[in-house]
Image (cartoon, rainbow, N blue to C red; front, side, top):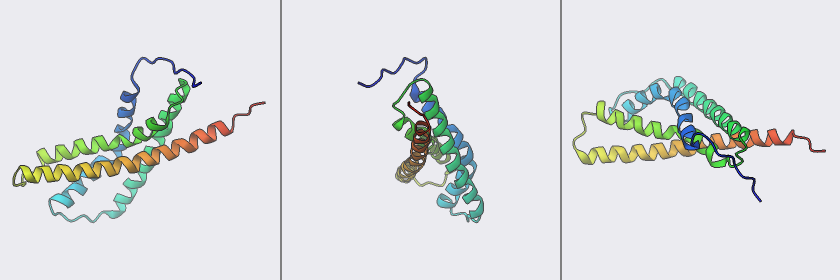
Length: 156
């Protein structure tokens, strides 16, 4: 019989959505340059900085997911799997919202609604790919954290 999870003051989806703001904070300045090089035809030549931002994104996604998993385990919530995935995967929601912001304020050269729908479709595909990759990083890190945490517990 699964153990009953105690009631909380705040919903867990709010914490999961808030967890995506930290990884997005490491990414949003570089995201402007990437979108400008893709959609405005500008040259992108700062690949070393992009590698550093990617490594920071991986580290921050892993840390956010581990902290959120630990918080859920402290309040006796044993269903941490999808919350760990969506905690670091929620950065994709902010990336998609930023791409909408980029469409409204920086892409005035689009020639109509068909171009805007095409841009939003590509942005949605990019956001789903970011969610799958960062969510996988967060889940695997949380899985190894929980495995390490419970393997060190001695039951005699």
